[in-house]
Length: 125
Ligand SMILES: [Zn+2]
Figure 1: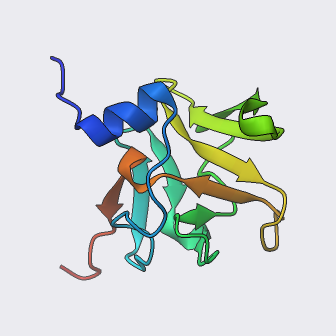
Figure 2: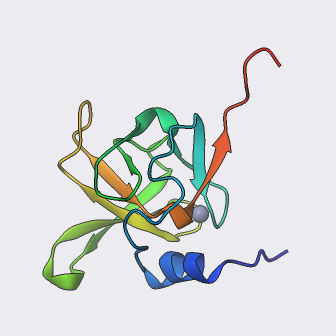
């Protein structure tokens, strides 16, 4: 069964687009849970590793597992950056930079449209 993707998601995931900063629904989200790939549902980041980077995109210092994402050298726009794609379906997610907080020093800068938050269940219910 094929899921229909929104035009924004299609642009980011398959044409390596970038959403406008401060436009996404998860930029300031403090909800607990797991951020999954919006295309295939692969778990990517935990809300526990999310931090406020002030960049306008949700930022994480670590993926949920080593295989959750894949890394690719990206020389577009005259910069050398590391592109992040989904480890399962290969959709473009964002980029990783070396100016993140402890303990990893990494900043995974991800497009909101590429993420789907699966909220943690309330305890005791
Ligand atoms: Zn995926």
